[in-house]
Length: 305
Image (cartoon, rainbow, N blue to C red):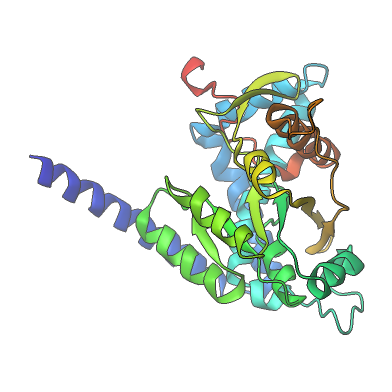
């Protein structure tokens, strides 16, 4: 019976993956701009018909209690469209990423913080870059690689193993080292820092055993990994974000290092550091609310709706 259940689940994953791959391959018949527009409209149509749309609107109402319902609905649709764009942008990533550090003329990708990228490259040392699921966050490690920075990135693979492998293979060709999120991933990142190498971490994911913090004024549990790595290695921490611009263009920004909160004895305050990360991500989301993944159960409320 167990083998039958596992076989059925495997078949289901395979079928879903093949459907997704077929859809992405179909987009290749269009020019990049047209394909991204089609994916945006398709996601805006399909997203509200999924079970995640109810969670999306609940999250938005909780985060923005003073906004009108019509505005929240508009943000939700933009968020679904952003997800569709992200999928299509995978197909055309090599065409979209046209930034050249040696010739930074305006193109689809604009980079803010180039001097900081160069300083980190020319003065090698361990550091941590953190980001969130905003804009096309996949472009950030591609930008780092363009500057000659090999950043080992911690990522959460999709639940579907066939899609996860496809995504991993795609990322591996264009980015630095990749570490799938699992029980031993923290040790892998620690080894990278110990060897003097930089790492990248997404910090806006739900973490059931995390530190109690606040995000949009509501309780969330935040992964303490970044703060604990700073406590262990004393490395600098840099925020980085991606913002979608009109005309299928992108702004990638590497910000100066944050100040790490410390206790009176000089040790890293892990809880306060986790809160600093949340505050930074919240500021990004408030600036471009439709570019964050609101369907994500960041507040762990799915079971209540």
